[in-house]
Each structure stands twice: as C-alpha cells, then as structure tokens.
Length: 402
Image 1 (cartoon, helix red, strand yellow):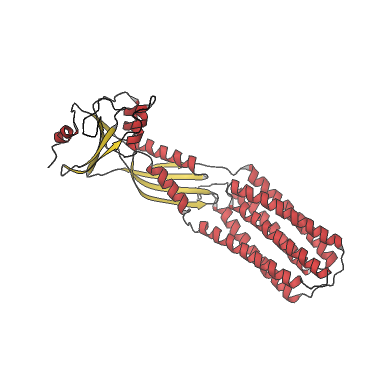
Image 2 (image 1 turned 180 degrees about the vertical axis):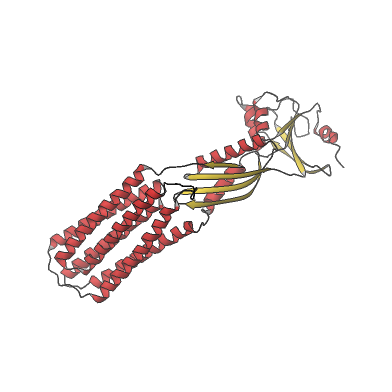
C-alpha cells in the first residue's frame, strides 16, 4: 500500500484577493447608503443591505481561507472543507438578503423623486466596480480552484445585476414610473437563484460527494496505462475545499513489493501531473492472481518463424495459455510499428508490447543488460530466451493439449 500526502499551502494571492473583496464591499455599502439617504430609494436601501451582507461574507471568506491552511492531530486531513462551509454560509446569507428585500418592498411606500442626474451617474459608476472586480475574483477563484473566491465572485455578479436594476428603477422613478417594488422583487429572484447554486455545490463537498465522472475516468485511464497494472478494482475520489483526495485499489503483475511500490509511485506522479489540486493519493496494491498467461513471441513473418532480433521483428504473436489446462485460449499476430525505426527502436518496441500487458516475452535475442530488458522487467514482464525457430516448436515445448 502506498500513500502520498501533499501539504499544500493556500497561495498568498488568494488571501490578498479576499482582503480586496472586503475593502470593495465596504466601499460599496458606504456609497449606496449615502445615495439612498439623498434619494430615499427603496431599491438603493435594499441593494445597500445586500452589500452589507457581502461585507460579512467577505469576512467569512477570509476566516475560511486562513483556517483551511491549518492542520491538527484531530484533523489530519486539514480544514479544507471550511471553505465549503463558508460558501454555504454565504448562500444562507443570500437567502436572508432576498427575504429582507421582499419584506421591505411589500411594506414600504414608493419614494417621491428628489434627485438629479448626478445620482444616476453615481449608480452607473457603482455598477462598474463589482462588474470588473467580480470578473477578477472569479478568474482568481478558478485559477486556484478556490470555492470561497468563486462564491464571493458570484456575489459580485449578483451585485451587478442588482445595481443595474436599481439604476433602471431610479430612472423610471425620475420619469414618473414607480418601479421600486418591482425592482426589489427582481433583485430578490436573482439572489435566490445564485444562493441555491452555491448551496448545492457546497453541500456536495460537505457530504463527501464524488468528484466528477470526467475526473475519475481520467484518473482511471492514467492508472490503466501503467504496464504493470493488471486491473483497477476500485477508484473513488472526493473534494475537500479546492483539493482532491483519491483512493485506488489495483492488482499488479509482480509479487516483488519493492517493484509494486515503484509502480504506485509512478501512478501517483502521473496523476499529479495530469490532474491539478491533488492533495492525497492512496494506492492499495496486491499481486495479481491469474489462471492464464499471455506470451509475446517475436516473429520474422506471419508464418511463425522466430525473429533473430527483438527490435526489428516485424510481427509478434500474442498467445494466451491456460496455466492449469495447458491449452491455448487465444492467439493473434500484431505488426510492429517500430521495426524500421533507426534510433531507440528496442525501447519503443518494448513499450509497444507492454500496452498488451504480456506476462512473458519470448525471443531468440538475449535482452539481459539492454534497455528493452530493463523496461520489460520494470513492468513485471519476464523475458524468456529460446533456441526454437518456429512458433509451433515453442508451443509444442509447452506441451499444450490438442
């Protein structure tokens, strides 16, 4: 069994973005409250309430990011899920915000407009602030796979929609159309929609739902391409914050524990290279129990003549033999795509054969001390040197049942 633990730290850039988010939200609250004082606008008061909730959400994001870096004896897997917990809290705050907006819209009277065009210009300006900062925070969240930053960036997207609706409501109010209550209701709907998406996403992680099917299949494919692996018996993965934990059970074509451990290390490295934000990989391995063996025999032609040189063999016979019954289960001949290669031919041919996962390679040429021999041995494949000149003679030597 092999276990790898990568104690990754949250980049300082994520913490910096969290502090910037807090500063931007405080600024938006101050501006919106000031404008609502001058205008008496219900929509502006509701939107400032939304931004005030965003301030507390930004504080929660920063706390979550800091706590998620810590580990303890009681929490050896870290506090990564704190970020998802924070995302859930943000979602609940959004629901509360929507409720407050609807309540205010139902009970309040529409204000009489007492403001000029400068108010509209100011509201138009505060639309741009969350728009550009939200895009920046979403990009940072996706880059670092941070659910907290993605959640907070989504809040700014809602803020843009809310401020846009406020602008239209103020414009309508100025022109004599009472749109405050309608605007408040639309803002509430947008907020509820965003909150539901965040809550579902966060709860999946908190309840240890599996990582996506696409990621699991990518990991499974990476494991199966390892020549020494016979089967992938089980594969599970889960998210924790931005990180992924993977556990796999495999059978390997070797009884040598040292070689099996090296196989698991190669698998882990390949997964880490191909899949971002892997925190821990746990690979359980055990030797394969087979009732049959696959032989790969180098041929100089399709008629079954054994080749004198492993690398230039134009064909290989793949023969599956039942170990107990001594009978051929399957036989096929495959072409060697690297027989005409000038350099590195032997290694390429060995890698080509390993894709078929043979147990034994039979050749007239000795591969001891040569690159192909090392490659085959590392994958748990035995090399058998023969004096036979035909495939029929080799199969006859196995004393197979007719």
